Length: 374
Ligand SMILES: Cc1cc2nc3c(=O)[nH]c(=O)nc-3n(C[C@H](O)[C@H](O)[C@H](O)COP(=O)(O)O)c2cc1C
Image 1 (cartoon, rainbow, N blue to C red):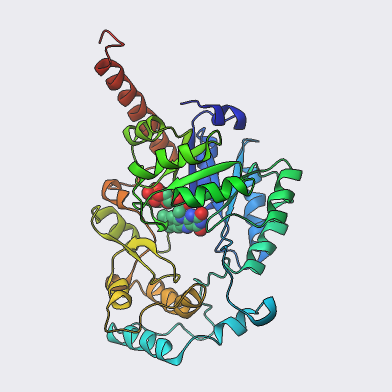
Image 2: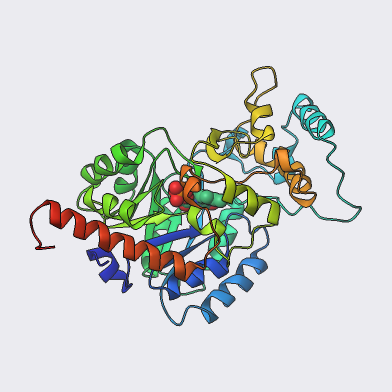
């Protein structure tokens, strides 16, 4: 499965994978695709350095990338000053804190043990944290830097280009995509409504060709709702130069999900069991629908706060829900493709199945077009 972009990067298959897990990213790169490690959960630069060291040792010299989350809009602060995490946290209203306490109490979620750190504390979408991640990442031979929530700032794009690193950015609309092109981005990931994580309102089938047209001749990767080779063929038929998958890796054997109960929930979920909700981060993100998302989406409640306040508000609660595997509240970002994630397989098995399915789809189209005997 070769395209101009896969040739530029020297990869066998134009299959890009976003994942928060180094073992998944490395396995995808070794399988001939392009693994992209999500940096958002690394609050300590040393932890990111440790995992990038590990990636270096486990990718056989093949290319991989890093994804950061730098929102285009910052928290409003007087005089454009940078707020500390504690100052941002102080902006959370007591009503919202009380709602978290009441929701956890309703489900009997125990407190964390004394001294037990809240593991789910994602602050990587605060610009200063994302910048500290970049300071680490640029010491490694990453080939691609991706940004989730907008075009990265001009100095970051310039720094990447100085080091020969390609820059990609996710876009949920043709307008976003054009903005990325104007900002000097090299690759646009057109991410449709079906996708897991932060997502816009336009479905992939409509979005991909719109973005291809909007930024031509820049290469576009199709993302959102792709979990089979047939869907890859569809993305390429719509003009993409590759695909970008996030959800399918969550149920691979290399994924380090924090609980078996969550894996079981993902394996059992159907394509209608996700919701686009602001419950987790304050921005609309597709995730498993749970009683936690229902509580936040209920008009009778206070509703989610804007990013990054909501993420800070719910961090400890999410850790407790995960730690005690409180089934009705247990969730994760995941896309509608969860309905096809019905068995645990290795990353290599997933890639083999994707490439086989792609070949089958191409054969079928060739037959339909009268281009082969079979
Ligand atoms: C668990 C999870 C976490 C995600 N976190 C990020 C992130 O931190 N940064 C980012 O650029 N995209 C993130 N995404 C979105 C993916 O990069 C990708 O665009 C999306 O998963 C593609 O759609 P799919 O889920 O249908 O494969 C996340 C997706 C999932 C499933």
